[in-house]
Image (cartoon, protein in one colour):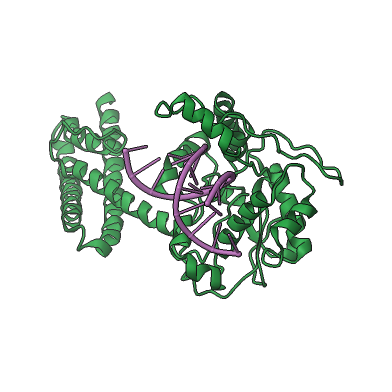
Length: 394
DNA sequence: GGAAAAATAT
DNA sequence: TATATTTTTC
C-alpha cells in the first residue's frame, strides 16, 4: 500500500516534470521564433535552440512512452519506477536557477539552451535599450541595475515618476529643501562651491590648484529654484530666443549671478530644447512642438502650472519649455530616490559642496546624448526640429 | 551668440 | 580609462 502511494506520487512528479519540459519546449519555440530574426547573425544560436527543442521533444516523447510502459508493468511488476531517470531532468531544470557553471560542460542540450536563452534575452535587452527610453544607456546601466535591485516596483512607476538615470542632464538633488524665495532679489545658491577637485587630482600640483582656484571662476550651480526663476524670466521675456541674458538676469533678481552664467545656462537650455534627438527613435523631422517638462514628462504648456506636478501627455504647440525636474517633482520622490540621494549626498559631503548634491540628485530622465546635438549643431541651431525626448534637468 | 576648453560626472 | 555632461572662457 505504501509502495502504491509512493508510486502514485512518482507518477505525479513525472507528469509534473513532463509538463515542465513541455513548458520549457514552448519557451524554446518562442525563443527560436525571436532568434530567427537574427538568424544571420546568430546561426549557431538558432542551431542550438533547434537542437534543444529536438532533445526536449525526444525526452518528452520517450518519457511518455516509458510512463506507458510502466503503467503496463504496474500490474505485473511490483517494482516502483526508477526515480533516477528523472534526475537528469530535474538537474537540467534546476540549471535555470543556477549560475552558469562553466566548468561543468556536460553538454546537456538543455543546459546549453540556457545559455542561448540568455543570449536571446541579451539581444532583447538591446532592443529595449534602443527602443525603450526607460532603459538607460550603458553608461548608466549600473545605476539602473542598482535601482532594479533596490526596488521591486515596475518600470512604469519609474517612468511615471521621475527617472534618475541622468542622460543629457543630471538630476537635481533635492535633499536640501530650497527656501521659499522672496519677491526681492535673493541669494540662491550663489555661494561658490567649495574647493573643487582639490586634492582629488594627484596629477595637479598644489601650485596649479591654487592658480586654478584663483584664476578660474567657481562653478555656478543651477539649483532648481534658480532654474525656476530662469524659466520665469524666460517666460516673461517671451521665450528663450527673445530673451537676452542680461534681461534674464535682471528679471531673475539673483545676487551674484552674472550675465555670462545666465548666458551659458541659456545656451544649454537652447541646446537641449532644440535638440532634434536623432538617437531618440525619432527621425528628427517632426515639426516643432512645444512641451513643458514636468517631473521628467513633457506636458503641453497649457497644462503646466509651475506649482504642480501634474504631468500629462505631450502635445504639440509652438515652443517647448523645460521646467526643472526637481522643482516640480518633489512630491514624487520615491523611497529609492531618497536612498540614492542619501548615497550621493554622502559622497558630496565628502568632496565638494552643494554643487555635487545638486548634480547628483536622482531625479533624472533618460536623454539623448548631447554629442548628437553637438555633432549636428549647425543644423540644430537653425532648424526647428524639436523632437527632444530627453528631459534634462537644469 | 556660439563654440572651444576645462571641469566634473558616470 | 573613456565618454558624456555641464560650466567657464574666449
